[in-house]
Length: 404
Image 1 (cartoon, rainbow, N blue to C red):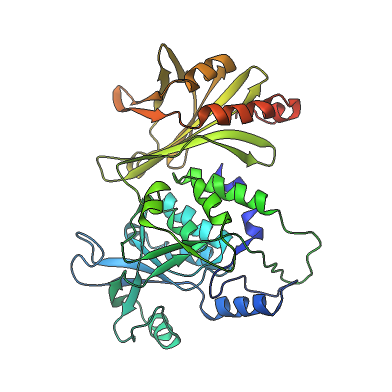
Image 2: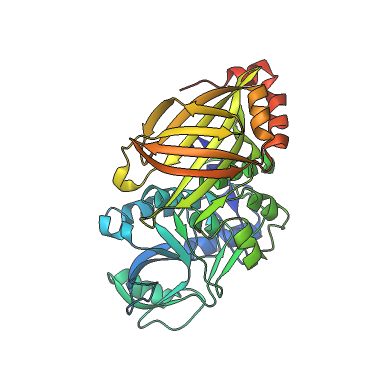
């Protein structure tokens, strides 16, 4: 589901202050944009394993992955290659970046989610490097010439801005130190094509923002973060307050749920979506996404995607959704890497009655053992369903949704 949402993201770049962009031959790029492209080419995102004293990166943690620089057009592949060594997947990632190419930030976020990795925001200062906001050229050469680096982890003065935030959100467990800063702003397009001038205009900002809202939901984050970013000029950065970091669910905690939100899930499918994340006894965070789609003019299709612990990636769940006197079971399921997807249908009148409740009760059972029984809010569900119903009344929209 996630992969097909992001073909549009490959076309966009979020700008930042003072610089970010796409590398390669550019078209329709003015002097300012060319300067941004040069900056990202000079300081592409680099990854290295750093080691500090005991508890340097948290209780029981002394080694971490440093991610410093700008998200260049090859960053996602390099990060995947970097993780080919399995032991690295157990390490937390600490970002210090002012932005870059959005598609690469999303690719890194998805890789971290695949391996249930942890992430935070901090500068990594290797031994032998002079203190600076980022890794300067001399320090970069030192790092690239060696292997693992002895270093200090410095949250104070570190930044994760623009697309860096999207990479951070892919981690299953996310912590942001009070002295670190997260920044967002609206999108900025810089076309970068290898050999020819673009023949079509970039997608609208509404389309791109819709893609990113879907990504937020999939990662267990309030898609309202994209609306907040859209209010900020691409030439500025809004540094998020601790209240905003908590409100949008950027830091993980024992339980967090997004509001129900009406979203353009794909170019042909409109849905009402919600996600929630729960801390497991193992210490692993698990995100579940529920989407309500058109099925027939008088009913809906419910899709329920649940992550599973990596140690139980092949396990199957039985899921029930209850409210007041009503209940439905998700009978049809399919195993996916790291989880399961369940489907059910529900008449629209029954869905409306469920939406009128204060909470819905979720029950998950693995084999004969109940693994979860908890309530989720219906906040925003009635209004979102009204938007969905307008799409369901469109015959073509309803026909686009099929049970896999």
